[in-house]
Image (cartoon, one colour):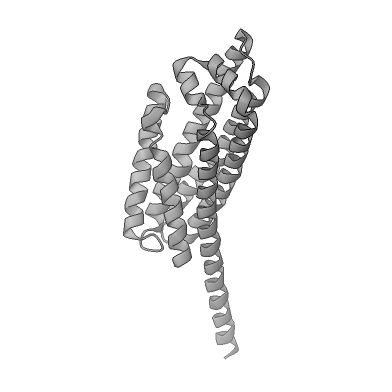
Length: 232
């Protein structure tokens, strides 16, 4: 009888741990995605585009424009740093929920854990361009801006493909039949394809307008996965 009570207690504790993991994963997935959207709004309304400046060779114009919106861009990049940290936590919790296909879950986890530090370094590089070079349009500033900006944007592009492309794809595969419904699995396939496409665009000409298609697809997957976990 005592052994049965102990076993029952262990089962109850395990169920409670799973419930906590689901709630934490759900809340962080939604919070991370919303945080990234807020950062994107700050970036979009700034009227500046480092990617476009690099592709068009107009770094001088970018640095001149940055001078008037430094505070907004610092807020934008700071919010993005917070957002990717939250998404990293969400990815870890989702991987924990996948017990049947642990190898695939670990691959997804590697995508998240590689992307988070990579993109934080990328955002710091962009911050360096904004804070240290914003307003300077001499040849030296432009040359430094081109190099540091290229490093920052390309690291960000690669991390984006991993965190909202590769991560969702492998987590979807790992969690199918457990907590990932069929429609979310299909959306995970789409995120994976978008991530692959963005990498092709990156190596051809930079992300550009077509490469950035991964952003809404991946962000929607994160929000949808968060809702699924909370409803479960």
